[in-house]
Length: 341
Ligand SMILES: [Zn+2]
Image (cartoon, rainbow, N blue to C red; front, side, top):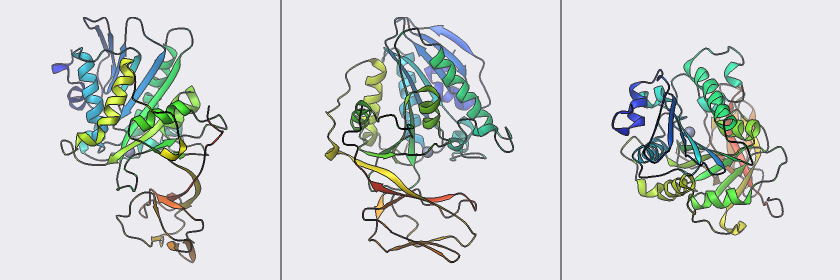
């Protein structure tokens, strides 16, 4: 049903869609293929977690795709036995086949209904965002009755290097408390830099968090490289922790201590106002780079943007965005002392 138990290959061979099918493994795990890149595992006696792992939202971010493909294959070959219901999403097969971040539009800006706004469902990324939302809803809603815990980890790698190789985006919780156990889990994945958002976003992780009450994160695991060129040792902590999570085995976490983390919040978002927008630092500057207060960061016509705060760091700079779009995010360190649940 899945040739060679290789669901990634099967997905990439059928980027436009796959007929749903289901079968049971000898160990009792129920396998359901819902669509291309969408596979659900349900143990006979599922424990309390409903776990969604997403990769390939950006098609050229290969390391997370390799981690998820291996996890799927190992479950299908019964080398890894899930203890929890697990939905794995290879999010954008067409972009993976194209070796590009996106085919027409950034998939991670289309969730929470943004796929249908403006011009509507005009391209495959918009349609895919809509069906991914439907699959996530179905997965959480089909869970057994009782007290459940929902998770979604959307795994990425970044275009540029980063002063902190791995980092996570914690979506805006609308004044709910951040989860200490989630920060501890992220650190076990090798992620100790966390950006705490204070506004809604059209991302997959915000969608899962806000719509479904999941503990959800966008996790940046390192720098983009082509398939086969990832040094998988650099991803070992994330790989092993995610597999342990799915298998219901202990994850090697350590008690939360803020000193072990770099925690940031958004200080300001700089939008491109004119075609003259220009960044005043090298193209290959790393995410989380800081400069002294007063340093000129960007100009936009007559407007100058300078570092305003001690420790202010830049992330995701991109002068090539369309006018009106975000060209850079400026973040500052913050504490979560006394604000964790
Ligand atoms: Zn990405």
